[in-house]
Length: 65
Image (cartoon, rainbow, N blue to C red; front, side, top):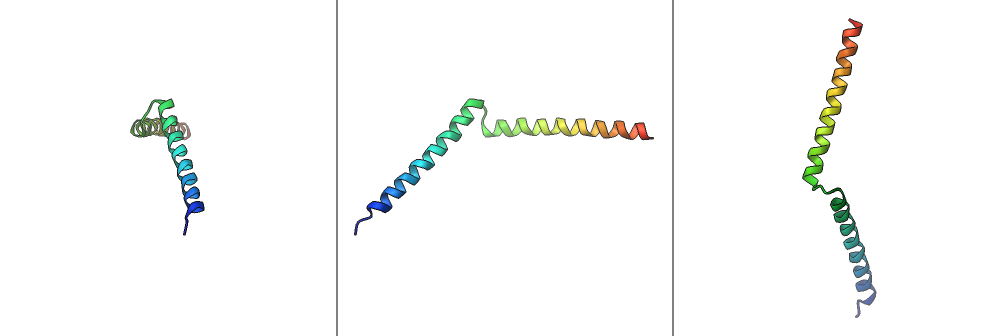
């Protein structure tokens, strides 16, 4: 038995998968950051956002007291 159609479908699927991997790699290269660097940057941004929120809450507490 031949597997012509199945083989063609598998090749097309693999080609699509490789293109997705290449797109993700290109997106990382455009930002110039690795996954670890991006996580560190995002974590620092969230900490800063949380500090600002805490300061706002503290300011509201002193106004109402």
